[in-house]
Length: 195
Length: 344
Image (cartoon, rainbow over all chains, first blue to last red; front, top):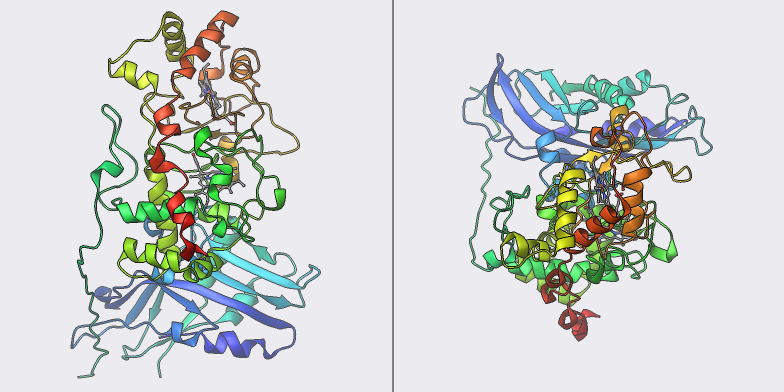
């Protein structure tokens, strides 16, 4: 249900922006009706990878007759999971979403090239993560929906790129204040589409 | 009424009884505190420990198969790097810190001199990925292990199927490291009332309790905290310790208090290996303390020690040598594994 195809593949048709990596964790997907929790995702987390469309579907089991009007999920991995040792599946460190020099999951990875970048390779690298105070980067996203059985959650990279200044900051690779600000922008960059 | 997505997920737990939970793999020595590691949630299994031991000694974990964990953590020196101030890694690259001795890790909350690692199960990722140490990545390690018949067998024994994953590889290495318990030094025999300190060791013990044990707290000889023990900053390394992790100025120049068990063999000393001998360390504490805003309060007033007293403390520190540990066959290079022809 998480659709990244329009962001990963088509946005980069403009010659001055190219995206090479877009990967992020979505966890604790919950469905609400009038503010009351009606269903939640049993999985610990899902790794959404723009280069692998099969990764973008999350199925939430619900009871018959359940209606909902809101989707909430966490963008990233919570602190409990971050201190629980090594985990498997989408959370296996071979997925490349775990820092090695310091413990902790990378919640969100975005890498590419853009003309605005001032470094010689015209490259940007955003590895957003961090679970410990004061640089906690997990963000709850909450989206109102019409309650269809299939919802497409879209990460609008345009919203994100409208707010970051690649000429000023093209690299974030550790837990920091910049990472926190970035994670807050991401939080606002999701929309829901119902087919 | 709309129809909703209606999916049932089944979690099938098969208790196949393939492994052996063996209590003797890890015991809390009498009178010691409760370990930090949760052995109920994450129990040690004999087969997993064996797998971890093979991995610990195997150069397969490095990019060009030249360096193993044991290259920098050798058993005879309490699993530290013999004689090197800064550790030497792949292609003779020199690291940024001294490799710590490895023992009693089950009691540690965090790992590395600055606490960068929050759980023993993820610790091995750091040396595997560090370009100055093994310069490899865990995905490639998993590929190499998958191509080795003997590892397929060991993973099968340890996990009930031969799937080799990053999770399992790291878990196995950590299980082996958790078994490294050193608790059989002369000091321990004295505490168990099996023997006595001689007069000098006894004087040293009393001085130690007075000057040192607030940080190097018995029985682990560390309080498992970060402290600034007054070392002047090495301006070429500019290592600020814990500050790199928290970016909190209060953590500047704080390093993990290391255990002093087997200290006789784990030279050179300190995070950068700046002191070769214990007498240098004692000189530091008696007249080398550098004052800075984060200096630990225990060291604000000078520690007054005569040279005889310093020698007495060293005599006591030598009672922390645990020969059983240094020569324990369970922790040594697994010869039978590496001589199996299926290994190559």
